[in-house]
Image 1 (spheres, helix red, strand yellow):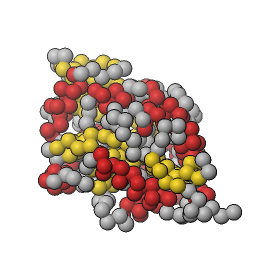
Image 2 (tube, one colour):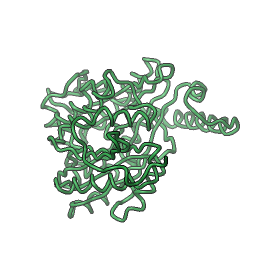
Image 3 (cartoon, one colour):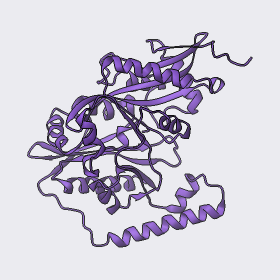
Length: 377
């Protein structure tokens, strides 16, 4: 029997829905999450959608239910973001899923409407989401209240050591002629990159020490206070947030290093090796940030990241950067090249006042958005 539009109900998430939500996510995405974790999918879901420190027991996730079965979900993750000169409670959309048997009935629109009504009640000011799903992008483009693109384009970057190995294991293009042309393009880009960087040297830092950590201490709050005036968009990088994001094993296995000078933090680096494909693991430069005046620290940490992955036999490294940001040049210096794939970061401002114009007109160096600010890894 064809599912009826009247069969389902739309409501807010309620504790106890976790098992059914995760079951739906695995059904829709075939594998969820798309990276290796050291816990159950249920525990990962609770980390991601319940224990985020910005939630403060306020949950805006919405579900569609029929006969006790959850057939749709739209999650809302809350973050504090510096936009312009202000600090704003913001929402990031993630893991929207509709069961294949119930698509085309307007369920997503109803889930989204209830979620945003709930968000409005708690006074959020900004929402954003990143997706390459053409259906989702089209919906956002048709939303009269939504803007489409980040003020500056985002670039996905990739470093491939053995090109033939990468195309054998990771490139799905079946047309042999197109695959050959792609390989020629990658080889050419690598050669040009090496030639352009022949005269560039890695800085030697005598005043800075580096160490691996398993948890951020309160010094990172001082670091963030120093760096935030330089940005008109940056997810709040406090100890509470960073320890939740990168130091809780339920979120994934990340490696974290800090750069110190005179016992003060001047930069940090977060890396991950995604081993979900055990035969072809991928390296991710997840997050990197250094004081504005210490571009040499960002340079050193990037070189360290590339060497770290190479030393562990990881053939491909991925990163993301705002086009025109100083880190784009640094990443390119160490072989991270443009994939030509543009991450679609969509946003909507609710109550930003003058900060909306500051954000919308911000130059690249005043926008910080990395892979870690999303939830794909």
